[in-house]
Image 1: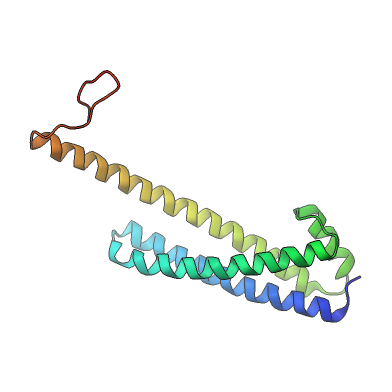
Image 2: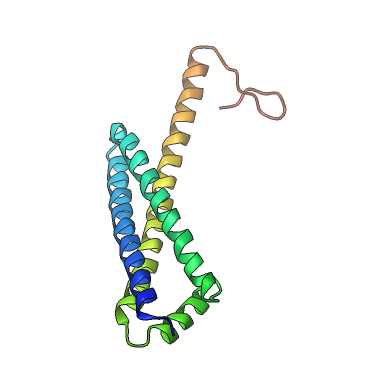
Length: 151
């Protein structure tokens, strides 16, 4: 069983990580809204905020993983859950924080994937528009594998 001081430090890191994930999920939701409303001028701000949060989350992830490794815990969900049950039997706060982190991380992953799909659709549309404009101006410069012009 881990000492109270070690667990308090671990809980503190989990709280910070949870707060950062909540911020990230909020930004990803704002980004999704901006994308669906074609408010592209806001995207640069979201990118810089996400980059900053992801850097902080990466540092906390490294610190958390070091904590697990130092305690002989494999970095897989089953092993971590077993360690939490053994090390924190009377500390539901840490187990709750861990479960909330997993939910937030999954939400962030899904939102990021959705935003990526939206961006991909815009990119495809822009590429088709560009090709159509090139063809309309007589500047067909895109060719298929057989050497034929393609759109």
